[in-house]
Image (cartoon, rainbow, N blue to C red):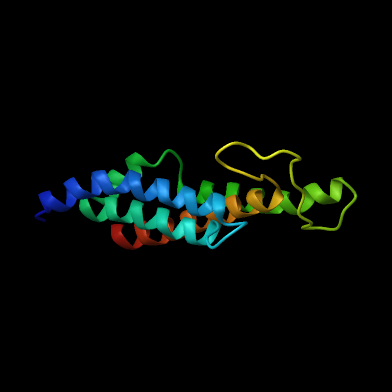
Amino acid sequence: MQRSILLSFAARYLMPLMLVFSVFLLIRGHNEVGGGFAGGLVATSALMLYAIALSPAALRKLLPVEPRLLISIGLLSAFSSGVIPMLAGKPFMTGLWLKSPIPVIGKVGTPLLFDTGVYLVVIGVVVWILLTLAEE
């Protein structure tokens, strides 16, 4: 199968930019438009662009962990964002925030932990499904 040289060149430069943008969407999501779902879809788009441009095997080599492990970590993160307030004597899924904002990131709390879990689950599920389909 003939691969496009232009697409593979563009994918190598677009992928890091798209991943940075996805993290930007993730971090600002609990205050403005964005969040874990939108950021996860942008990250998945970047990864799948790489898989289309090079090959699904190249993406598998690039990923540091299996997509199923990302799903597990994401679910654990989202669940823990609900349990942490219970440990503090608050109702499940109550938003708890650090007193002082972190430079560049801003206010950090359990909603960001939940969004991070959603981010990882979306990446894991979509990449797992699309890589399975592409390898068939």
